[in-house]
Amino acid sequence: MLSRHIAALLALAAVPTLALAQDYNRQPSFGTVNLRANFAPDPYVVNVTAGGGLPAERLGGRECLGSIANAPDVRLNYSAGQGLPLYLSAVSRADVTLVVNLPNGRWACNDDFQGTNPGLIFRNPQSGQYDIWIGSYDRGSRIPTQLRISEVPPN
Image (tube, rainbow, N blue to C red; front, side, top):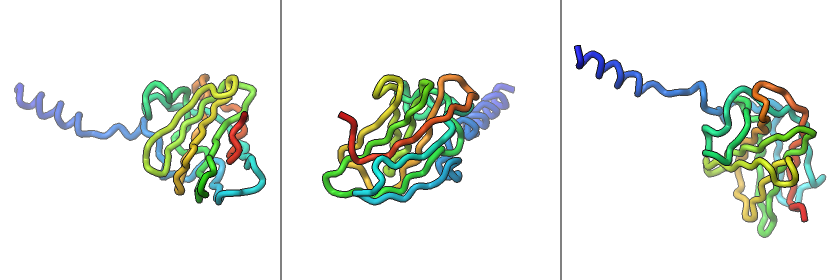
């Protein structure tokens, strides 16, 4: 009897928890952007609706905050240029968060960079695919937000 319980527990432990994982293989909800170093206009702006039903904290620890959608909001395919940083930010009337899956598979997150608007600066950005989510603190809410992509970080 005990061996059946142990076998059942081991079987449950082997089942992946896909429902909580963000899926950067899905089509982004607000499109794909292809940019090369020295792009114009700068900043490049994408209007999105921030938020979702999944907790961002499960991605990269305590720096990943808010609730996000399963699919990325925006996919950025970026070709880096020598010496140019990449700056990703979100601007909204509400307090939103930024969650990014980098080309190397790592996660970068930010909550408040300028006031309650999040931002990330990559001083030596990688070329490749950046999957970007913008989260909100009110789970399930949908908040009008601008994603801004720039090579000119704020002062």
